Length: 143
Figure 1 (cartoon, one colour):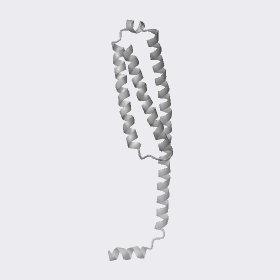
Figure 2 (figure 1 turned 180 degrees about the horizontal axis):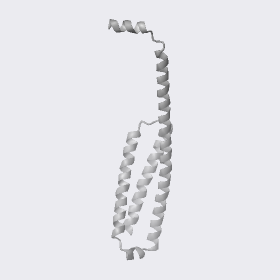
Figure 3 (figure 1 turned 60 degrees about the vertical axis):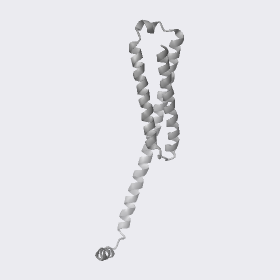
């Protein structure tokens, strides 16, 4: 049981790192600073890989634990496991909220870029109306 509790605590540690990293980047994203996006994505993937590994270890330990051993678990061990699972659930819920916030920031930035591109296209088209065809033809002949 000690191994399960240790693995759950390690998983919570990585979830906490994930949460903290998200908090920092949400502040940047909300200010329109996306310079660290690629590094942020890679760091998230690394942490998720570690969490996936810990989940597989937990699964392995649970499969190898006999039912009688699980039923004979001490009350303190059971309490520690329940506490670790509650902490995990809280981090997961917070991270899901953060991800929605991150997606919102990215969507807002994308919308602003699309508007800017549309404005540039509109201005380019308007400027094209002021071109003199004879002047452009003369430049082409001289080149």
